Length: 218
Image (cartoon, rainbow, N blue to C red; front, top):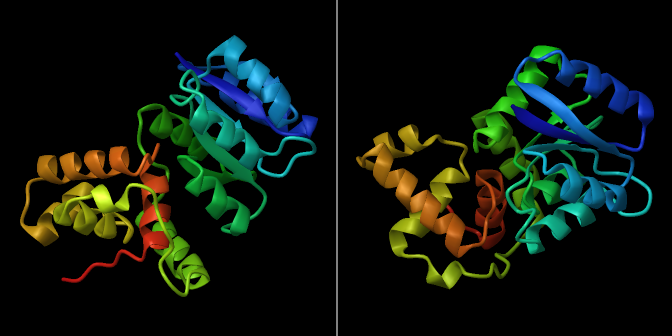
């Protein structure tokens, strides 16, 4: 059973999300919160697998909550989906950089919401190649020069190369085909790059690679 926490300052939104989640046989809502501080209490009490999180809330907002998760070993395993009324904006980008696994819009179809929860609960990133490319195109221009990324100097040449390919939105299989490697080898390099850069999710690795100015050279 996938345990889900709902965090949004609008009660009607939470009611709608609860109705959609509770209709699925393999999911259950284990708590609700209308700000980040309440969410921290619910996170420790309900131990959810997935959190559906609004970014803009009074008091502790979604970004600050994500930063708390990154520094709390007991909560780092919680997978986070940003639920927003906006498409890709600065807040969504910052949320992905802070460790969110992906995002969906509040008017997402019920089947797509359920699919999103299952995807991130399984440990996958909720970013399609087209969305990843749009992220890179939209926000890479914010850094006219690469910025410091902790752990970047610990990456091997191959790990830097693979991280750059991940930032293009390619899957492991697609990267493997492009570099004449096995998917298992690519997966190993991705995992090691994420560990060295302290990236909780593949989406966060994308953001860090963009900030570091990593680019595919072949």
